[in-house]
Length: 201
Image (cartoon, rainbow, N blue to C red; front, side):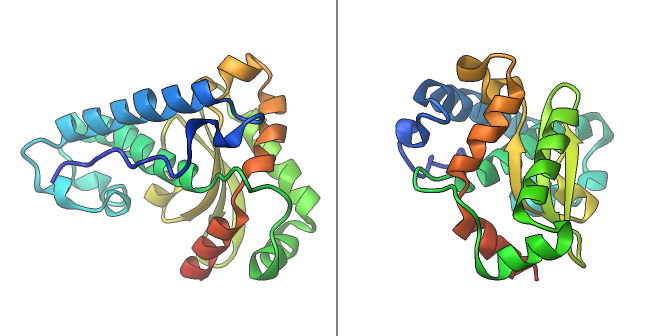
């Protein structure tokens, strides 16, 4: 069965003023849809297209060599964006609590130190990519990936990712990636991130 574009779990304008409605509309309906369309085209005639997207990204070595980059890029784009939409909420922001807050403090020293690491990862990613909070099997880690590469392909579980492709912020922030990352914290859905941590642990 072909992969499909998931519905955005809130209206396009739900994240304003931090992320504008037009950016959300183009980002979801155009960019994400293109990844899905190209992924399905790359996997046409292959049984691998029946796998859940997360599982597919752990089996890239099984994809035909002439299709592997297309599956890696577009499959990663589909998976990463599906996580991204669910990680945001118009009623998000603030700080995490409970197990997630404790794990962040244990790994990074404080929530502020964690925010600084995510921002540094996002700003340090040259060109397009992502900054991530992941569970590496033993604890939490912050890392960056280029393009649409996903930590899941390296055996790590993504808990939270900030999209630092220009299409994620350029209409509102132009070249001000630092301002976008600062604003993004105001719409993070910590309940979703906490649930991912519980599942990973």
